[in-house]
Image (tube, rainbow, N blue to C red):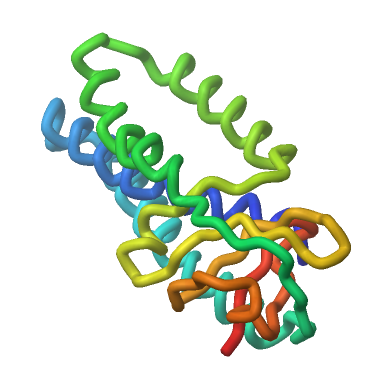
Length: 170
């Protein structure tokens, strides 16, 4: 349940970009079926966030957690926000589907192997925050929490999303 959850969660961060691309395709040709498919995939990506969190809360083992350091990890949020406008920029630059598909596959591969996790704009809108947390044994995790964490003692228990990503439970 580990790596694929992280990959789907990160890929869902790009679902607004797919919705934007659907708009661009529809604007160029209202009869384009690809626009409908992109809108459906974008909506599914957005909804997958809820299913992932439900699976983690239902199937994930609750673990005690002792943190040594906590610091915010929302600094890459602006990069994701910028990516939502890439379809409009690509349309203006006349990128074609094969090039866009290749770039998407490279991105998916990178998301699969990356160990640190950037902030997720959709989760930020839903009130989640991202933190880089060093555990008492020295390993650094990305912790997703609904609360503002200011002190390591604020984190009592977590559920594992992947080997480097945890969801704080209250």
